[in-house]
Length: 231
Image 1 (tube, rainbow, N blue to C red):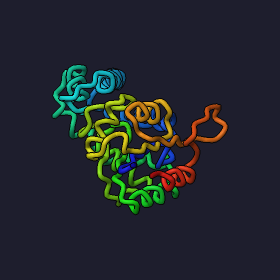
Image 2 (cartoon, one colour; image 1 turned 135 degrees about the horizontal axis):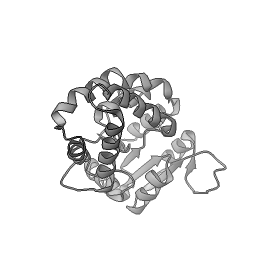
Image 3 (cartoon, helix red, strand yellow; image 1 turned 90 degrees about the horizontal axis):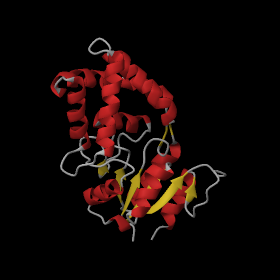
Image 4 (cartoon, rainbow, N blue to C red; image 1 turned 90 degrees about the vertical axis):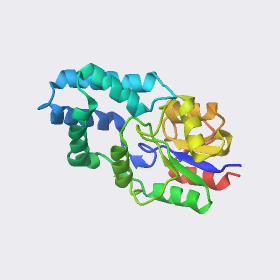
């Protein structure tokens, strides 16, 4: 019996092409940090820190802790000196990226229906952004006023996608066994495969005619029907 549903964010609940979004995001971050650190070494340090946070999982240290330690090492500056700059960027510049995204009306109905059924709900986005950036993207999706049971962020997670342990950690935070969870996402490798590996039921948000067939796949309207048919 399904007792909780996990929702990916970008490309699932928010129309946001990350292949377009990320280069613009990184360019604006690099430009913002240029007065404080040379641009190319800054990006190199950022990429190294993100890679370590993703590929060197550690159940004792959060994603943010691993990122911060690596970033300090690469830049040879304490994270305390960086934090005011990052905070200003996310408050002053990051909101300008909203124009690259578009809310999806069906997303609100999908989550509302899950709430009406009494299911626990998690935003299961890849926690490679700080909470402030994820909260803003929820606002862009028109979901900022919803009280979720868990939102994955760099600060509160120890694993990232596509590690199966990420899905086990979210299920534990929801206090629901993985096999009693459903996962809705648009990325086969990041969202669907690892969730299935830990026993979750899944719905793959994708366009028809993608060359792959799964029993549970389609658009958000079909995801809503899948949700209605659970249990």
